[in-house]
Image 1: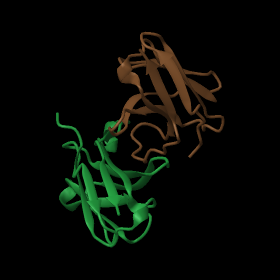
Image 2: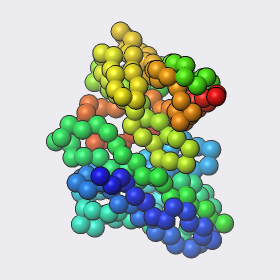
Image 3: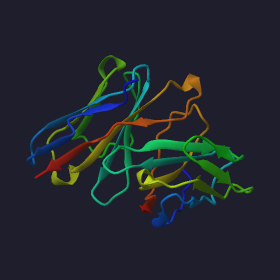
Image 4: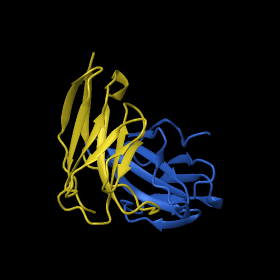
Length: 116
Length: 112
């Protein structure tokens, strides 16, 4: 079974540019989460999709961040325009539908974003 | 979410057991105790979880205090590959799709 994949693994952009991160969850996982760790800080939740719907986006820092999950499969996280403080590692995770009673979130390897 | 408190760092010798403590004095009756770990340059991975009884799986054991205000993750024989940051996280019951709330975790160093 393929795990959660993220692309790219590393992105370096200039302040003011746009970057789109992609996450492919494990097949069949309805729940998809985005987290990030900025330098020296703890891993923080950004948002949660159930299939194609945003269940909770309370962790999104501001309106420069836009997440989508078209068709309930892969998800993208766009940062536009990027600022220096957006630098960090962005993790995607997925988990099985809640009716399974499952408890485990499976994380991807992360995308390291560097804004210069 | 109720908070957890863990030591910033711990060291262990290879092939020896490791006991990673976690305090969660404000845990609610329905909170499950989860442990995740993050190996270098990887995303976090699930280790184990429990509610009241001690739990064992292929990766580790979880010992939960009777009053549930603390727990201990036990690695029975540490290997170099177990060097990671270990996170103790409280979550709503299984099946809840709520997000994970990470603290600062415990950085485990395994010495050869």
